[in-house]
Length: 150
Image 1 (cartoon, helix red, strand yellow):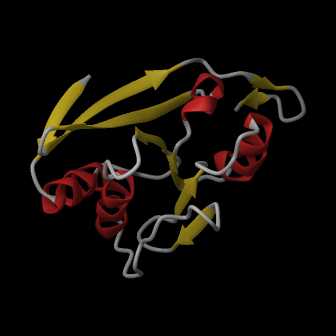
Image 2 (cartoon, rainbow, N blue to C red):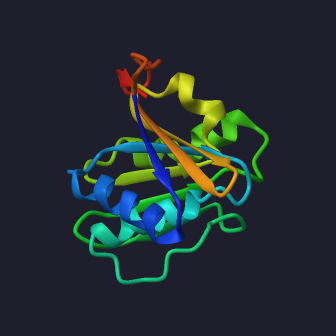
């Protein structure tokens, strides 16, 4: 587990870029934090490092935005979804596609079913953001139809 202190918007973007530069495809990243903590800002940094030229916005109303760059970025926002099964269904197609990087805002309810992922928690501490990064490996659950881990 590691921590980073972001004092400015630009710090959070740069932190996202540093994560994005290490991605090779197939990664799942769960972003947690209260409203306004900087989850979408961090996703913008990841997108920038993947060579995505489009403006990255929160997919709060669309649920998912897909961007093309060095790697394809699938950016989800589950804030408006209350049903965990619906979250799983939305992710399923992208979990099995090699090469997609999936970034999920408000994905905490599905963390226990993911095989492995990067969890990034962003907390607001006075004027700064405290960003905690933890790689997790749960072993995932087995999808009997596909014969693999979800």
